[in-house]
Image (cartoon, rainbow, N blue to C red; front, side, top):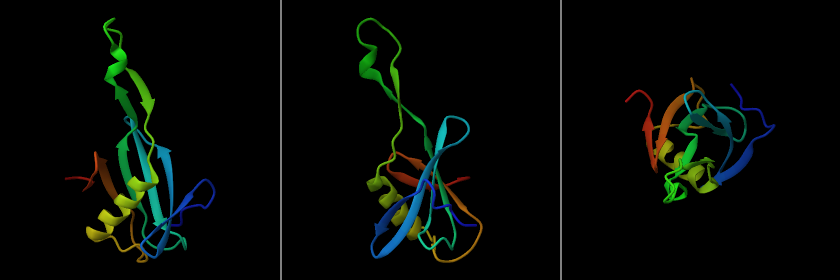
Amino acid sequence: MALSKKGTRKITVGQTEYRWVVSPAADGLIVVTIQHAEGTGQLIRVYAKADVHDARSAGASGSAPTRERRAIKPSEVEAIITEAVAQGWVPEKSGAPLGFDWKGSTLLKRGR
């Protein structure tokens, strides 16, 4: 299964190029999908919370905190790729997509 080039971004980690895209997912999550830039090989799908709450905006009035859209930075994508490879992802090898959760700066295999 190839990741469409439309709407994706490129990133180089080490000497390898990848493509990645962020999409909405269910249950207040976003999903970052990453694949080797050649469009072959195994995809990884990394789920993260979609909203970031800014508690400072609640102030003395007691109003509810505001919500800001979660942005995935290229530095986070690089960290995700590095950790996924360390956990056994072989980007050039074909196979069913792998699922991970991104919690803070930790990558966890889904289902754990």
